[in-house]
Image (cartoon, rainbow, N blue to C red; front, side):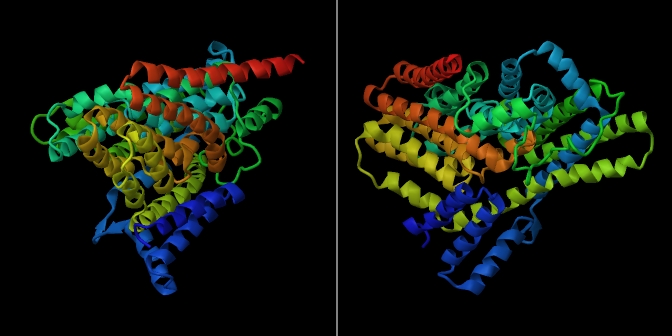
Length: 518
């Protein structure tokens, strides 16, 4: 089964079940079981042992604690505690009151949230969770659905970090390209130079970011998003009927302190940002070898440790504020427990997503998809388009952008070095773009899970409402990659990609306005 078309079965089955049942835990669990059975040629007992081993290896691998996973899960618990303190202190409500006087429209609130997503470009995990904490009080007050906030967060986190050289993603990609160029004898480009030149070729990332602002200002609510937004505006129900498996929502648990102040929210978040970024710089500098630069720091930084440290310091700050407000009260224990409880749905989904990712890795699904490109003898002009499509399917099936980068970037360099070097940068950019597209469409992506967590949205609602926007940007990007393949230009395909997205948004706005008048 490994490395064949049958290796796609668990991923496809999982996605179909998600669409049919909207139960992400059931869908992920079914995919895991079916995948394990396929790995062991329908041996049930061996499949059971495989599943146990995969869960065990999430925490202990080669007789060593898997510190990275433990730190990330611990950070989620800390984030839940921090969110509970911010809610109970009245800081979230005070910040919402303050911002609603300055940001007076729903469009402005959405644009402000998107701007935060663009500014916080250091890491996608950090972006997803930090932006949610800052923006949620504002978007809640303007009755913006949590699904809309999750879309804004997700569509600015990975797209921004994938085009930023000074980010965990950029550093990883640049470091990966160094080894690939050396292995394929590419001496005309330095990795950093290549990365920067690839930025305008990343049509999907650029299109996704543009779409967010168009959604904010032109009210381009497509498909399921329209239902969520209408319900939020008319009834004030920001989450919707699927309130199960919603992480980080405490609106019905705590009555905010009447003496809450803006600084009760802003100071802990500022501490979280400063402590996390500082820790990333320190851990990166300590792990870097040779000359230390900003790129080597971000290439070697320990993101999960930094998030845990930042979260711990932020929670301590919240606790100190709580003591000043309420003294040593019994509510402290309740706040901590309820805060941790709100993060359990995200942790369950993340654990299952990690396991099915490992199962899919054992089945060599990624290698099978990569082989489709490697074994093809198409016209080189189709290479950027083909790499975009295959990378998208790979990230969709495996749930990992970085894994897709690791598999597909070497193939892109190898194929274009043999066929047409003019397609090198467009093909590599297409891999990056396709990986982010697939990341946006799959329910098992870490970033997608954390975006719904940061927004306090139902996870499947987030996936389903984001899908139309991801497909729109992907279709526009695909046209751009076809044009670049046949023209070897950059300005024309980029303009065409942007024109398709902007034109669609304007047309949608016009039709909705005309319908409303009649």
